[in-house]
Image 1 (cartoon, helix red, strand yellow):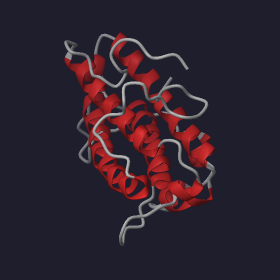
Image 2 (tube, one colour):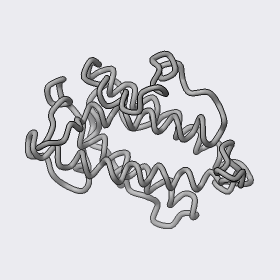
Image 3 (tube, one colour):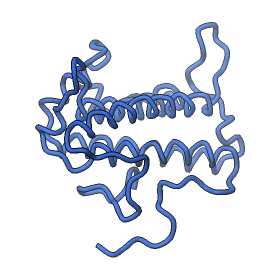
Length: 197
């Protein structure tokens, strides 16, 4: 692999629009999360810390579902991809966390990478539109008030912030990997070169 040139792809734009900055912050969290869970076998992805039952594999699967839930169901109103619908995740709030133990590492990484790719494709299309993240989302609030796509992107950032913190603790306990950002030369192990590529 050749040495990457330029700034690392997880750096948000230094001078972008408000929407570009928001999506850049989300991508930075995605990259950091992917680095924290990268290149592990089944045992590594199933590791817990202390009394918690959270695993890196469970977090990978959970965040893949959250990516699709936010973009498909909440923002665009599209049905969830069949990979989620076919397993009845809607009937079990913790299905993603406990079912991840029976998935291969390859399936977990590929599922997350694919969900992020779908989200990033949606974001490019939205930014190309006149309304940007001010676009009205398909899902409204409890009293029928409309919600913007921006609000749901903020929810996604919050979700990644919380779970990247969990991944920090688990990964440090597993093999000592610490740090805020991946090294500039790092790229995910596997079939995909970048989150969402």
